[in-house]
Structures are given as C-alpha cells and as structure tokens.
Length: 476
Image (tube, rainbow, N blue to C red; front, side):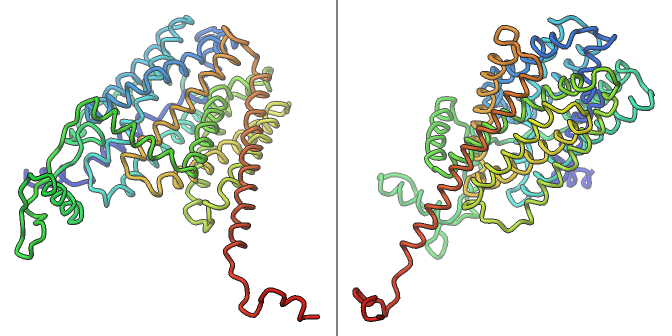
C-alpha cells in the first residue's frame, strides 16, 4: 500500500496517465479518409455540402467557445475539462457513426470545435501537478505522444482501408473503443490543487521576493517579519498555499499581462506571423482532402491518404526536432526565415492547386506541413524564451485566438455557402496567395531589420585612434 501511495505521488504517475490519454484520444484511423466516407455510400453527401455547409461550422464553434473554455479550464483546474473533452470526442464519433443528414454533420463539427478548444486543458494540466524542473520532460512526453497517436492512427487507417480489413463504419466503432479507453484513463488523473490564474501558488517565495514583500509591508506600517538567526527571512517556515482569485482579478491581471507582453516589438512580430500562418495552415489542412478528391476523381487514390498523413507527421516531427540542434541567431535572422520559408509554403500550395498529378499534390502537402511545423517551433521558442509560464499561456491563447478570428473571416467570405462559396480550386488559390502575402511582408521586414542592425553596428564602431580630422590629407 505504501508503494502504491509513493508511486501515485511521483511526477511520473500523472505524466504516464496523461500520455495514455493523449495517445488513445488521438488515434483516429478514419480521419485521413473522412471526405471519402462522407461523400461515399455510407453518408451520401455531396462535396459541396461537406465543403461549404458542414466544415465551416467547426471554425465558428471553435471561435465561439475558445475564450470561455480557456477561462473555465483554469477555474475548474484542468482535469474536469480533460474528461469533458473526451466525452465530447465520444459524442462526435458517435454522431459520425449513427447519423447522416447535413444538420447532424454540422452538429458533429460543433462538438469537434469544443474538443479542439479543450486542448488547452491537456497541454496545461501537467504544469499544475509536477515541479518546475520536470516541465521540459513532461512537455516533451505529452506532445510527442500526441504526434505518435496521430501517426499510428494514420498508418492504422491506411492498413485497414488498403487491405479492406474493416469498413468505414467498423473503423468508427473501433475508434469509439479507443476513445472509451481514453475516457477511463482521464478519470484516474489526480485532481490538481492549483492552476495558473484562478488558483495560484502562494507562500513559497525566493529570498529576494520575501525581502521585497517584507519591506513593502513595513513601509505600509503593517505585517510581521519572520526572522532566522541571521536576520534573513526563514523560507523553511513559510508553507506553500493556494491563493484563489476572483474572476475580475484574473481578467484584470490578464489584461495587464497582455499589454506588457505585446509591448515588445519582437514578440509582436513573431505573434503576427503565428496568427496569420496558423490561420492559413488550418484552412489548408481542413480542406486538403477535398482538393485530393478533385485532382484524381476518377481513380481511387484516397486509399493513400493515411500514408501521406503519416509521412507528413513524421517529417514534421523531424524538422521540429532538428531545430533544437541549430545554432542560428533567430532574433536577427528569424523574420527573414519566416518570409523565405513562407514563400516556399506558398509555392507548395500553388503546386498543389494547379497540378494534375496526385503524387505531386501529396508531395506539396508534405513539404507545406513540414515547413509550417519548422517555423511554428521557432516562433514558440522565440516567444517563450523570456516569458513566465502564465504569460506564455496567455500569449499562446491570444495568438491562437487571433488565428481563429482570421480563419473565421476567411471561412465566412471564401468557403461558406452564405458568402462566396468558392469551389476548391479557387479556395486554394486564395490560400496560396495568402501565404505569398505573408512571405512578402516578412521578407521586407527581415531585410529592413538586417539593414538596420548593420547600420547600428557601423555607427557603434569607434574610429581608429590614429585617424584624426584631416588625416586623409596627410596620407597623400
């Protein structure tokens, strides 16, 4: 019994449970074949209904619930929202399996928007139950296992479809079983006692923080000082406590942190790219299967979708991992890299849009996804370098909200049947041009930053000692 208690109190216990949850909740064998499933005999929907009426609902629901879910996640201390996310995922899969009408599929997209918005609970939970020194390992494990889940799901789906081992409906039943395992696992997660905003850690402070607190208290004429033998604050006598803040206090603090973070021009530029590129990336990934169906409608190339997704996930992981071993001054060359690689992303999208060869289209997608993962990793690192965990969570949420707001505008204007309702080729022409604009903006910005840095460097170099006014004349 003592061994079990010791094991459950160790940081590995919640990390392993969260990784099991992350794996089983992301193994989705049908996802690479969603368009063939919806437009095939199982659901008998048209490509226009899927593209212009059903898929846009995900964007609208994601935007509408993102902020409430973000605040609710912190207030409820993560675990309830993790469990809720899995319940919503179960409902989404069940609706896909047992319903077929357009309104029912729109409801599916709404629930999946709630699932996506609840990802913040998964990525934040671990920071509330382990020590700061374990953050890097736990983050690496929880993020890697999700990518592993997506990859396993894509490969598994490819095998099941290629060898005709299961029908689409049976694959969905299998996914429900995997989701049930994830739901059961989430119930065993330890309940955190603190969170980043509403239930903050208090009591334990560094010596400098304690001295500042004591000095401020004495200046105000109140408070008592606990002293050790040396006259310094005794940290060992101060026990950790959890300070619960009201909603108004949290919102005020969030606003102050928001203004402080985005007062940095460097962070602002990286965040603008993050929001703009993530918007374009989400639109591309959401509708790329429709493009694949358009490129080769007469041949059943959709059976390779799972393999393409698996390859793109693995290469994306490799490029993101490789960034950790590069010695580049991203603060100087980063904006130029954002512009250059965004230009390559635009070229990949143009190639995907106008090619008639499905393998070229697949290759362009793999390149596009790998480039995005490469750049978003750099952006995350640059932004997080000088931020506390609370402020990083705020910036992460604000950037994604900005991306989602842009995505909602593009969806309502370009995709939705209530707007222009463009077909898939004009849609991808818009997305390609969108990345071309991003590339131009950041290339110009990067060149200007390098020119200004070089100019400042020249101005700060002191003149040679033997060079005095008029010295040029004495040389002749």
